[in-house]
Amino acid sequence: MRNGNLFAALRAAFPADLDAVAVETADAGAGLFYTWRDLDRGSAMLANLLDSLDLPGGSRIAVQVDKSVEAVMLYLAVLRAGHVYLPLNNAYQAAELEYFIANAEPAVLVCTSAAFPKLSKIAFQAGVRNVFTLNDDRSGSLLERAAFQADVHETAARAAGDLAAILYTSGTTGRSKGAMLTHGNLLSNAQVLKSYWGWQPGDVLLHALPIFHVHGLFVALHGALLNGSRMIWFARFDARAVAARLPEATVFMGVPTMYVRLLAEPTFTRESCRGMRLFVSGSAPLLTETFEAFRERSGHTILERYGMSETLMLTSNPYRPESARRGGTVGLPLPGVGVRVHDDKGRPLPAGETGGIEVRGPNVFKGYWRMPEKTADEFTPDLWFKTGDVGRFDADGYLTIVGRSKDLIISGGYNVYPAEVEGYLNELPGVAESAVIGVPHPDFGEAVVAVVVPRPGAAPEPAATIAALKSRIAGFKVPKQVFVVPELPRNAMGKVQKNLLREQHRGLFAG
Figure 1 (spheres, rainbow, N blue to C red):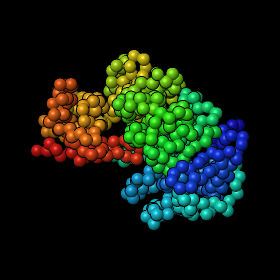
Figure 2 (cartoon, rainbow, N blue to C red):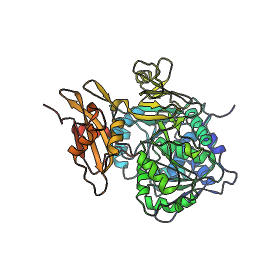
Figure 3 (tube, rainbow, N blue to C red):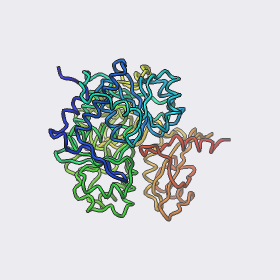
Figure 4 (cartoon, one colour):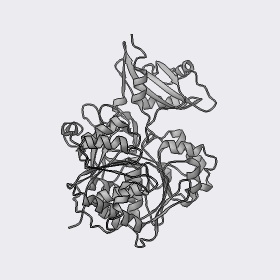
């Protein structure tokens, strides 16, 4: 019987020459070269260490460490040993981690040596028996203990429906929820993307994303591993350093902020992109202006796609022809993935009309960890997952994301979609980007408020900005107030944290 463990599929895709380079570290300082044999042996030793702990099958292994190739080996080892990987954002603070550890009840926690005094106390109080350290300089108790283990390991048998990972959502509206992803969810999505994005022999991935998130861990990393592709590995994104290594790569995946920073880097040129096959953007909306500027500067058209923690990738702009990629859209449903748009009464909407996005497919998660009622609420009676995103299809089947349903502003009984207003704001002279939010208002229920970031050397005037919008959009959509700020608050993946802006301005119209 075929082993449904994701690791078995990834390991089967390793090239025949295990001594070929799999990963080259590219940050400042001497680069390190890891072969495919290193990945195999290292993950085997770590898997054997986990086996030696006599953990129950399917134990959660919580990991909050800096990005490193050893962290990748740990991820592979968790899969290999048949346990459940629980990556935690490096930005999470003690109170958040206390919640995650109490909720997930991991059997093992791996953290940096710097965080050990704080996190080990939280973990031991929560009943976690095993706490190890792992640092980005190849030090820590995890590797010290694993060094005594054998470097061969028989992959644990797992079914496609068995749990492989739990990803906690950002929790912008209440407590974070743990999205349960199976071996089958992860493998099916990786296989679809390998085909749809044209992965080919000789591809080289420049990896500059975090690996505690779907984009860097499951989309980028799985893509390279499943294709047996070498990776140029950056622990953190640096526009100049990335531009210098792009001539050696063929695939790059980034968040919009990375593309904006590349465009601001003088050494990023058409020449530096000469061997590139594919630029992918996701995790946050890509401004049409950035899309156009990148095409003009590089000669390449960014492929924007759409996914989420609970579903992995759902839609993508076409790989070929490149001219079919449309700025401002996230493309077409991926093969095998169902995507539909319904109104708030569950009725299907025609092309051009905006409503809630619902999805189904082999990539859709198993449910929320220990939240059966919440899981049931998030699925329709015919078992489509309600994404919470709002969007519309055009006549050609391309999907445009308008915003999150929780971001919808109802002002004076009228629906205001922030993304629409932001689109108009971003077209105004002197505006680099914007965020539109709703805040409590005694008369309207909610009032529209805009926060804008100026272009270098510009100084948008709030009153003039409001006046300009009044000539472009309906009055109920026009912000009651505009604030000009140096930058918008963002999380580690570049998404604007509108919850922080709403909290900052919630008392604006009080009284």
